[in-house]
Image 1 (cartoon, rainbow, N blue to C red):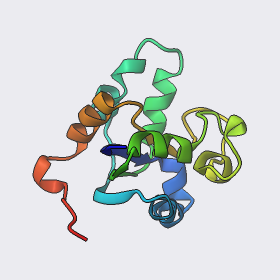
Image 2: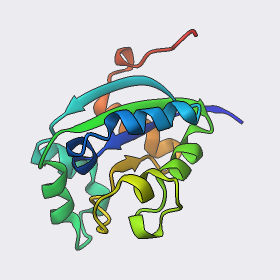
Image 3: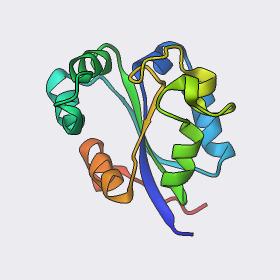
Length: 145
């Protein structure tokens, strides 16, 4: 297993519902270390650029409006097989199909795919690009302990 980095976004619904601490606790319990974090309020241009892969999908406008509605918490996670581990921890995109005990099953308040508490990178290439979108290399820490 390789040590990887992945991006997590705690979405507006989870931030508003005060789930940041709960989600961070789940990172720690699953051996995912936080090596960078910040709260940001995306503007429309940033959200459209970040989610450009979805621009031709019918839910794009709704997703953008939702993601700019309130601040989000962006975090770089590091650990053994961090991408797959975090994808499992998140659960299925639609909360009603997520596994019991996953973040989306436990904490998502809406059945819609965009209001599902968290976002996570789906592959190493995607993770590298998403991390660069939010963080400069000097803002990501190599933890020694």
